[in-house]
Length: 434
Image 1 (cartoon, helix red, strand yellow):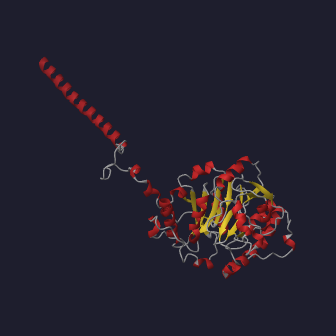
Image 2: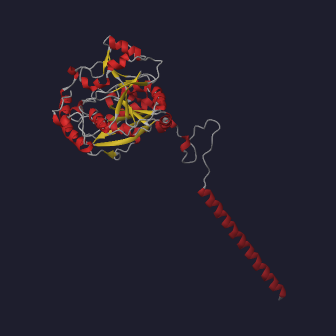
């Protein structure tokens, strides 16, 4: 009887041990399985070129070439998004393309060059970028199938001009009246032997849809991240080394919150073979009538107050440090210089569409605000080609006439805001701008 009891106890203990061991093994197995599921093995780090077969673990984002990610950044724009302008006439896309050194370059320079362009003139950006070593913020208008051309241009820039691409932030404006479509990448986009050329039919729709210059200027300005902004049109080319010259000037000049530093702009005859190397050379060209103040023949008031005669007589050459040549003392309506200033200046009024009163309306508000305009030397900018009134199409005058009516309202609004009318605009008829 005792022996039977002992055998039963032994048998029970044996069964308990087997069950316990199995349970413990199951717990350990589950724990190991859960750890494996929560922490899968990472992608292998290749010390030698990776094999031709695709990796076995997924996702392995680090193995995707950078070129595949950045080659066509505009293709990733969701055209259903963006932000509307105040009238819901244009959809704006900030920072559609940002070069990999744009942030760093913006931290290292005092001035960002802001510009704007339609698609058929965007190739002129290459001239500007060749002379300007600082950050560039550019707003581009595209409509309909033009977006595919912009994709092609940015892809070409990424592959063929990486140094320029790296310093650029590009922003897109799309009119609601003609929504953009991504389309197919142009064949020339990845061919560095073929520079992008302006499309022949890109401007036909602009007869009915005026170009929103001031929307674009505000978009480019607001995406600069430097203390100062140099706002120009895309066909205005800075003299060589201007970004560094302005850096030195602004670093040593006492801060002046209400100062706008004017950079003289010349039109250059197409017979001139190369860009003027310095101020002495542009003055020589001026004396030979191969360089004239910007808009001198088509609208003299555009730059007249800058006093080019005084600037040319003040001397200075390639060895001179950038300095203030003189102050603008004869400000007049319709003056529209290209200037360097903080982006605290008044915004460009977006009711002015197309041509006429787009820049001078903003400069006039600066004048009412108390800004002083100071002309710099020896730096300058150039527009290639002499302009003539006969080259202006009829639709530009129609847009100008419409903007003239807007200005009648605009000047009364400014008087209500600032309680000033130093040029007596409310007492005399408006000058005609062409």
